[in-house]
Length: 402
Ligand code: SF4
Image 1 (cartoon, helix red, strand yellow):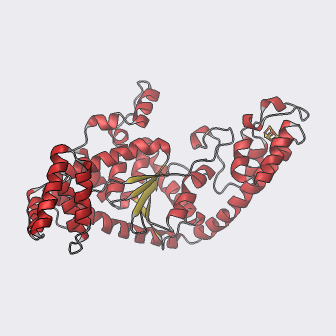
Image 2: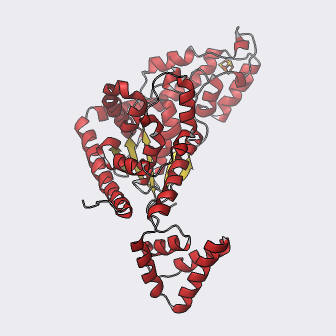
Image 3: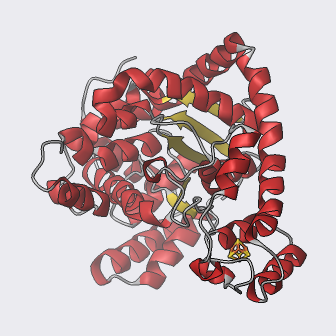
């Protein structure tokens, strides 16, 4: 992937952001925007899939999320920042893709299966929730994303998008217009080159010869007189898939080592174990000081084991090697007390949060500027999305004049 390749990612505005979001997602976004063309969106339609009964809260969380993004360093000069529902092409592509999506592809997604199991017969499983991975597919395919930053648990969702792109290209990329165009390109090749190309194509399609596929690809890429689009057509024809209208996005795995919550579990609003991205210093201090520790250290003089303490994963993220050694030795020998041990974590957290809080105050004082940034982002995103939708509708034989 190079800087011309696009990355698309979104976040649901269903609560205030916390340090888990910062370490797990946002720090990575800030890095990616230096090397890629990034499209970051507030996934308000996705918020409705589970929070439709609290839709009145979405606008507030959305405003707060945008301020947070800008405050951690998402730069609107480098990244397109926009709102999902302000680009209706997401929903339109979702509807079009739904026509070719086998139900079983959605039903086998682990999050859906878990959700249905957790409902235990209660009302709540909507079509929107089932179609969640399909809307996510539309979100990334509409921008022809080359990469999508994901956690391990979201890989099955991205796989749906990749399968859908393949299915779409197979179904609609090989239409009569495409075949006429490819035949025209072949007829303009040197006769020897055209014969080689046909030979490689036949060997791959009839015998599954991988080497012939590679040779065909090398041959096409070496034809310097062709445009990138024409090369793409010849490559698709060689592989029997037709024109690549919707490229398959690659996963970009988020860096491992997400921040755990103050109870040692994944940091999540639903576990009530978060440290807010703009949390008041006294609240941060209080939350860390009252964190549970290794139960073996019921008294100051009892030695403990950091591996059995939820404070230790925080040291692993925030503290230097030297401090970690101090914790390990002090805990196992009862040389330090738990409050003493927690202090460096508190200090580092506050140091991380403080500049974000400061910048957030500045952005909050300029709501018009935030709105302008988003409006501009909406326009840029919409123009790109319209291009893809036009191609998609043309390929499907639908009305596609804008
Ligand atoms: S000394 Fe630190 S690591 Fe050990 S139990 Fe106390 S808080 Fe946990």
